[in-house]
Image (cartoon, rainbow, N blue to C red; front, side):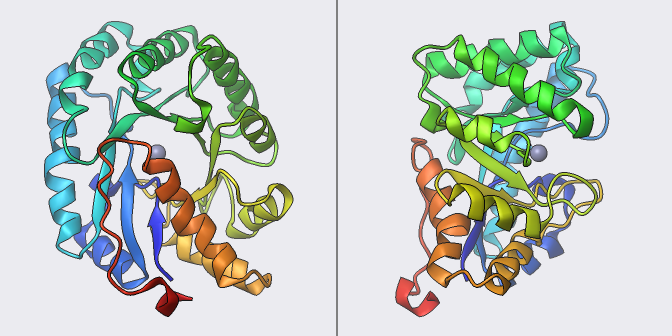
Length: 277
Ligand SMILES: [Zn+2]
């Protein structure tokens, strides 16, 4: 089955991973800007990272007929440094019109601090002003519930924001309802050590229905599994879901959400849809 991974950090993965993803049915991915595992020392470090995301990764993906899209921002962890963050925010607009750039993300909270909140708000303001889509990271483990509530409260300040163009990622059982109820898209991250398992993601699809739900691997430089979306596809089959139901979550939903970005020029695979059913 064809699928799309809506959240994966390919800069941290080797080229063999692109090949494996292509062989497993992946046709494309979206890569949010994130923390590289160390704090960068200057805005120029971010400029080079944004160039890697917009210039080199799409090429590397294309070697395996994969279509690579990306998001630009200062991430929540490095947002603790407010002055550096503001320098990086000034760089963002020059990348927003590059091919394949879907919007601003993944912004959000990490430890739910005042500095993180300040920079989160400034980036939502920028996205709102420039009519960009937004991808949001919610914190880990014990910080998740509080951080998600804080994020949703802060978004409430933007009365004109189109909730259907905002994706709140890394939801779990205790946060997904709050996100969906407000009309946002929700992303479930399949991680081997935290976040969500494929079976728990299937539970949430069964409980809430497939509308505005996405699943991703969030594969990165830590313990993670870039092929986690195929694990979800298998878990859905084992629970008796039809191919059409599975395809809705792993293929049609990401395309529906990303199609709202002016830079999402996706070329569907050439095999007729019927052959994939
Ligand atoms: Zn991420």
